[in-house]
Amino acid sequence: MKSPYVNELQPDQAVNGIFLVSSKDVRQKKTGEPYLSLILADKSGDIDAKMWDNAADAIPTFERDGFVRIRGAVQLYNNRPQLVLHKIQPVADAEVDAADFFPASKRDRDEMYRELQGWIEGVQNPHIKALLESIFADAELAAAYRLAPAAKSVHHAFLGGLIEHVLSMCQIARFTASHYTDIDFDLLLAGVLLHDIGKVSELSYSRSFSYSPIGQLIGHINIGTRMIEEKIREIPGFPPKLRDLIVHLVLSHHGALEYGSPKLPLFPEALLLHLIDNMDSKMECMRALIANDRSVDGVFTQYNQALERSALNKKRYLEGVPAPATTPVTTPTAPKPTANKPSSPFGAALSNALKK
Image (cartoon, rainbow, N blue to C red; front, side, top):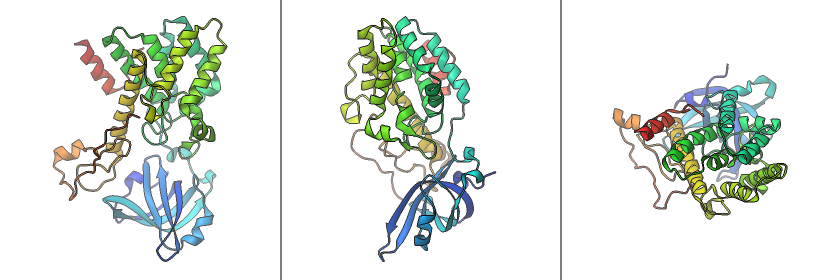
């Protein structure tokens, strides 16, 4: 069994263990000598690491996305643990258990996929149902949809993150559609299930999470609309105007031109899809920020670029943990947007609230 995990590392601890190299950067000291700046990871999180001495010998021995055994010690830097490496050497894939190194959803992926199929079975519009059944009948796509993260790093950045994110959105969509009664729920649900489908090709997640070549060239919005239009062409009699609405849902779901959407949401289901997506991603981003924060002192987390703020660790605050000497960093700019039983405590609470 792997030991130690990243989330177990403490200041002044000597470390001898195996980690995944998720980032490798060769930099120069003021003397001109090279040093290594790495991010080392396992399923519990990641940690900044530096190799100040003898880096020249170590640089050619391993690559990004490879496994390495390191010897070093944990120190504090900017109120966070940092590894100072004394020795690093490559480790063969056969010597590690991959499950120790890649973060994954706590939910069973096959169970989540069955839940997704339940949402599709409940669709009443025959054209939308035919499209969804056609897309998810593709065995290769279905396998990728089960496995893919929802993002490289911002939210639901773990194996199974995409389908977990989508199922959470399904619950929120059902609750909000029951409140805004003029919403076409089948159309909204199609947007929820398909808005990020391009991420099965946009992201590479065989090792550390990164963008595939097609992801960098085209992006998940364009990949997704291509996939949808190809399937629609195979369905006889699919209404062209319904096709346009579904494609618009995918094109506009980021909500703003500056955030990557080529179109703004132009009808209620499109706007609601954007808001649901933004809500679920932001809530997961803040949850993970607090849960994974490695700050040693104080009640605020490190600054999060996606949320454009630090977050309050409410548990620490209520328990009276002393505040740090500096206040959390914030910026004055506005934040960027980026059938069935509720599958989360949030879903249950929202469901109960709507019944009142």
